[in-house]
Amino acid sequence: MVSDLPGSFSQEHYTRAQVLALFTDFLRERRLTQIDARIVREFCTLHGCALLYYSYVLRIAKEAHLVRKVARGTGSRWKVSNFALEGRRVYPEPLANFRNR
Image 1 (cartoon, rainbow, N blue to C red):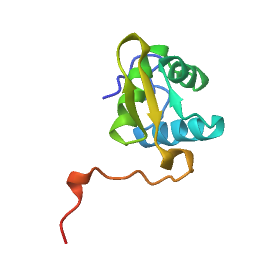
Image 2: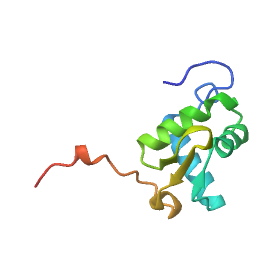
Image 3: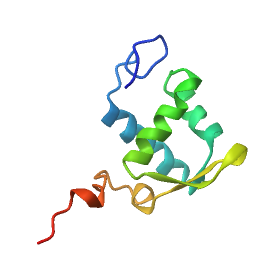
Image 4: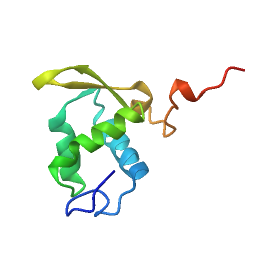
């Protein structure tokens, strides 16, 4: 949940889907294959949001399967999925949502 604190994405009138679309465009324009917190903070600054919301962006990107964590600890890195780099706007559903046919 995004708070209504000053500098939050909801305060800037961005919905969750808009944040994902903006983040996908950000990744694709820069052709990034791996990211870290510094890059996500740059994204937050670019869109006028407080730096502390980088974890929110990473969390919703992970839930949408845009990124996955490949390194842990202070050197945390996130691998960007191929479909985000190809410019596809449709986010895949988790496998649990598929029915056996």
